[in-house]
Image (cartoon, rainbow, N blue to C red):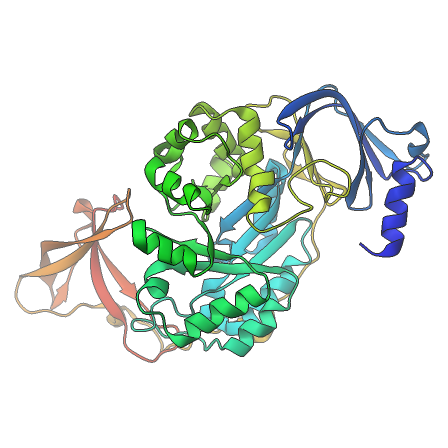
Length: 459
């Protein structure tokens, strides 16, 4: 806040200046004290809350917009701590789907974008993010590529990280795979971790399978959070060691039910939140975003107010956001008005002090953004034809290795299958859910990789 904005906030709180927006007669969900406070009024000036409780009558000016909450619940805007927007969406489409559902802040990974377009690609994404009507923050990719012995990507140097870390919308380093850190880390990895801490940026972890001494070593390297626990015991082990635990419930995995028993094991929930780790468009359209996670948490026995805390103040704390996740003076004015606390369906959403959505529809739009030409037509590929996807073999049938993924654990297993050969080409058997897959190197440095996938349910 600049000096003039601070002065305006002080004067409005004292009734010397009119507020821009006042919400009256709400039931405040106080995430600091876990109280429900009926008859609460809230005043907003610019993009900040300036007064909560009793608002001086002089703060209501001729230009002040007044919304009567009529006793409905006032919740802070939800904070998404771990997702992958660019995998599925352009930002304006994502905002259109999640902001009306009460999500006002999102922290997203951009690893895939960094892999393909490098520093300039991430900077272009940040430019688009700043044009949106919600608060979008980004974590820098931790490893680019995640598995250098298997992948080729756009080069990403320590100097690139230094540039990113100076950007105010880079709020941490994205998920770090624990084996890359614990099992003999290379010098670049160690220098990256050190650089992040010099810039006071939290390190997100990907700790699937890490436990006991390996988990300790992972945290000792500076990891601050983990979204990979799939059982209550795994969540408890991480909470006891000081990690922020983000229970994953999204399109990739649904772990909330498996972790829910942790609520009966702990008395302090401050380091527990819920995130999606990415959602598909169909899930957003048909189910929802963090609102549906809140409903499921309550159905699994979490206290409704605790659930609100996990989706707001706790989530904000995982990144050290000291002015997000609560309805209180000086906090960013992100608020939703919800008729039924356990339902988490807002009829009004305020983002950064502006009414952003009403009755499920966006009321403000972001600025249009066109990506630079380097980000378009960036696949360096030879022309693809039907012949490109043939898997040649002799005879009438052949035995091959197929990949079978476990939908619960996301671990893949080998499966030996016999497939028909037609005109010298191995054919999939979709009626048995055995499909052909092709991996294409976007840089055109090697041929296509072909294989077979079993047990997906896709026919």
